[in-house]
Length: 474
Image (tube, rainbow, N blue to C red; front, side, top):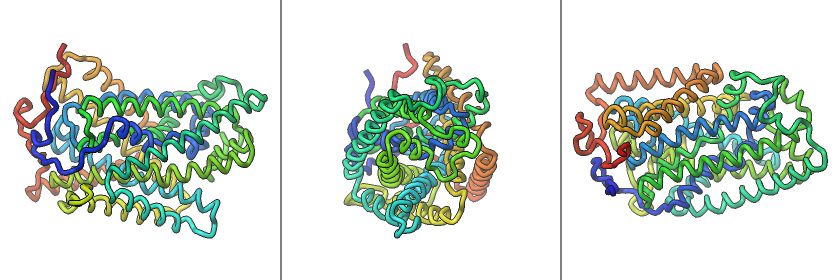
């Protein structure tokens, strides 16, 4: 029997409101991942995978499953906000935590802008009287207001949005299965999982680097650690459960969609620059009404539901780094009434607005920012796996080799291969961002602001370095 550590043991005060249940966390993770996320990037994954969309999502789910297991282990050791920044900083060393936090900022800070951009483009196609930039402003303002009112309001709205997304998904699956039963299949039943005419490991893992965009979000649950009323074990379980449920939904819907995709040859050779491949397939399967339904649902899911929780998670990352003086201290300010990191929330909104408006002027805006978001997340996840091994095996001598050595090593290897097969543009810009982080870290040392974490001392067994737990003991 172990005692759940308090935040004060790590040198912090409890400032955020603990109000989230296991169900709230599970819904939060599912909304962040978006159960209908493949609708928006289906064409890109189809082309990149040679039509083996279900295989790309299946491998992505396995890769993320190992990552979810590592998140669960580190959430038990350090049940506080900050995600990879906290886990790498306390599991390995504070400077490593800063670099991990810096890299994942590339994901968290840019992902709301990506979501707003995709949703705004979709809405502008239905209501052209309002341009893309107009819709983007509407989405940013709406989500900022909701997030400012407090995490409980965010939780209530996400539950409603999740039900709506699942209803749309159920409608598509029923119509799709009926269409297949009517003989509308355009390929063999197993082709979404394996096609010998196009298969290669480098091809599939290149597609996985795109498909994992749909899975990003289960890790956002860890950002809510200081607002959860559950213990750290159930926090970790909520991440694993959210990932598993989303993975099953992703594989099922892309399998059906891949079988019903018309003009497969054109999609494989020309791609889907307009991002309408899924909606074209939906029209082929069930008619124009299904095309409109799936497109509008995608716009609302990405632009409101997903970006709402993305903004909340990003503000918690900025808050965690700021209270450790690794970002400007004003980002750590908590609104006394709503108990949310108010300045961090407003900064995320401002960055999303500026970046989003800029990307509306570029033809490759969505492709560019998608690659950067994925590269930032995958690189940070590599640091997460290392932190599990260092904290549990090296420092604490854990004998739980599966959870603390084998699973993290396998997760690291899969993600490293995904990163290596990512687009050159994403690799280049991601490395530049990492180098900038190294420069910032170097300046911090030179000016006497060496990264430190509250309550952290040099001796691993000393009070404040980790939570008291029995993980790894027989």
